[in-house]
Length: 310
Image (cartoon, rainbow, N blue to C red; front, top):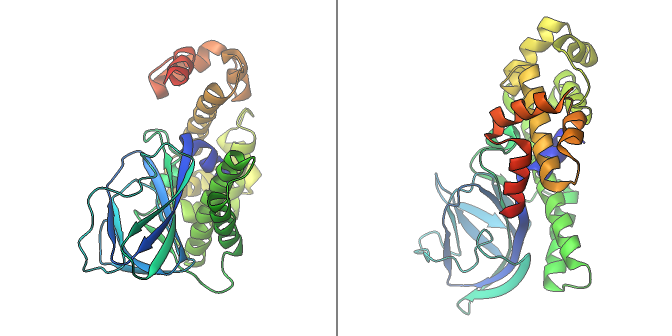
C-alpha cells in the first residue's frame, strides 16, 4: 500500500456517515466542532457560503469541495450576514446512518450539498492529516480533478437512489473520495513548490520512494543505510532530508508505522498476536508486546479486546 492509501485505511474508526441535503433560502446552519473527526462538504447544486473556523466567508459554487480534517466547527449559509442556526439540521458525526437525504430551510432558491464525516482516533491518525490546514477548499476548475468530480456524482446517486449493495458501494466511494481529496491537495501543494512538510516529502522522489518502501514492506529489516540506498542517497544525506521533510528520523517513522499497522491488524483481522508481530517486523512476540505497550499504553491482546468491546 502507498502512503495516501494507508492514511485512508488508518484514519477512521467505525463506519463513515453521509447525507445529501437540500437547503432552500433563507437558511444558515452552524456545524459545531467535533474533536476526533474529519468531514467534507460538496456542493451539488446552487451556491452558498462557507463560514470557516477562522477568516472571512468563502463563496462556494457547484462542484466545490471543502475538507475539514481536524473536526473544527464551521457554518454554511445562503447569506454570510444571516445568523446561523445553532442545532445542526444534519450532523454527519452524530447521525448513525451510513447515508441519508433531507430537506431544510425556506421556500427560496435551492442549494444541494453532500455532507460526509469520519470518526477518528485523535491520538493515532497518520501525521499526514496532522500536517493539513484547518480547511481545504478545492474549487471547481475546468479539467481539474475529474476523478474527484466523478466520485462525488456517484456517491450522490447512491444516496439519492439506494439499491442492493448500497452500504458497500457508499463506504467504498467515501474512501475513494477521501483519497481523491488528499491527492488533489498534495498535487496542488507540490505544484506550489512547498519546501517542507508532507507535501514536499510526497513530492520528493527519493523520500517518497523510501516512504513507499516502508509502507509496502514494514517487516523488512530496514536500516538508515539500506533505506538511503533504496532512495538513491547517501546515508547522511538521506537521514537529513527525511527528518527535515517528514518531521522525524527514518527509523522513528518506521517504528511508528509498524505499530500503527499492528494496531490495524489487531482491530480488523483474526491474526494471532504472534502473527501480527511477525508481519510488522518484530522477531519475538515479547519484543513486539513491549513496543506496542509503550506506544498504545496497552498490551496487544488487551488492546484487541478493548476495541472489540467498544
